[in-house]
Amino acid sequence: MSEIYDIAVIGGGASGLMLAANLDIGYSSGIVLEGTSSVGTKLLMSGGGRCNITHGGSIKDFVYAYGDAGPPLRSCLYKHNNLELISWLEDKGVETIEEDGRVFPATMKAKDVLDALVGEVKRNKWQIETPAKVCGLVRNEEAGTWELEIEDHEKIEARSVVVASGGITYPETGSDGSVFVLLRELGVCIKEPKSALAPIYVEDYPYAELAGISLSGVSVTTFGSDASCTCKGKSARMTGDLLFTHEAFSGPVILNISKYAESGEIIRVSYNKEFEELPKRMQRMLEDRARGESGDVKTKLLASLLDRDDFTVSSVSERGMVSTGGVLLDEMDMKSMRSIKYDTLYVIGEALAADGITGGYNLQMCWSTAHACADVLKKRI
Image (cartoon, rainbow, N blue to C red; front, side, top):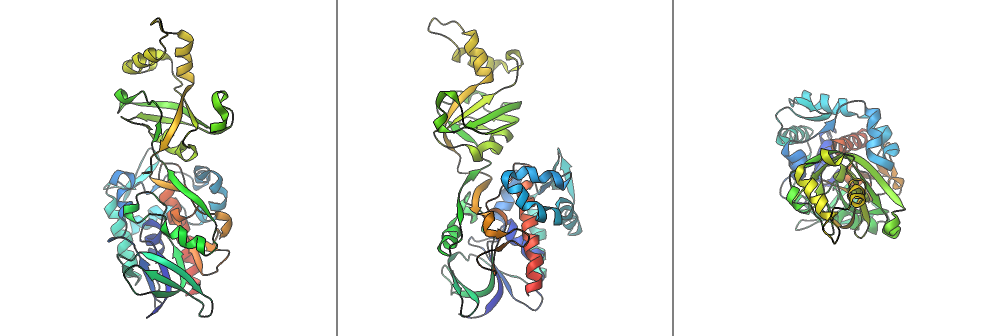
């Protein structure tokens, strides 16, 4: 082994870059280890390439966007909020605009956000190593350091390690979940990650011909598989825009509720509209589904489909925008993002068992947790 780094960051995605961009290591040494050939690949994909960096409005309203993870995240969200993120970007030459509460770079180019982050990381004297996939992580108690095994590289040592490896979706961007295996070996408790903010596939999907059509104000409810036809055991209910695709349900309401959907379980779609308010093609399809053996439309069945269109989930797309699951928040000091088990191990961003709804909340969480971690590391170095 050669140099001992003061800080090693595992992952060169949004949260890892945000940490390094806010931590001038001065005469210390820090390295960002990115498993793929370039940093920020998933960030470039965010918001369809436009990068929905955060949400507008009061930070107090953000807490509800993360479900049960909201209260534990409150302190770092309040300390490093959306207005701070917007101001930081604009100070680095990235003007922002707001559309329906969502904040984007004015150019609508995610690359501008990435360039600003990378530029600041370099100014802060961080070393960026690519490709550098971490495949081993061991605590050397005697030396008081961490030993990191890097695929096709020599091992390195670091006094502190920050896990910013993301979740499990889009593994080609480096978010492949492999770091969770290493953390489990260290005794860190992990909630099994799964895809979230993703389309939902159902058995006997009937709406392929409606692909591209969206409906507003649709309510979707998820039910446990033991509920059978009585649909007891409701786990979540949300209302918003629904989009029909060729193969699945999508749109904001589906993406937001997808984390609660499981294969074999029931989802109920309530269209919250009069029959005449629906698109003509959908009217015809619902009538066809409500026909009896005689060919007549069963009025009661048609009304039931409008209010309770039930489907069995076949799968949730593995290509979700984010992951749900990761390092349990109970394992963390949420003010510093420091592990309770290891005081020189930190976890930030999507590697935490916390995720938000669509609208910029997940990148804001990356910013807030990364900046809170940077605050503590500044004192340590």
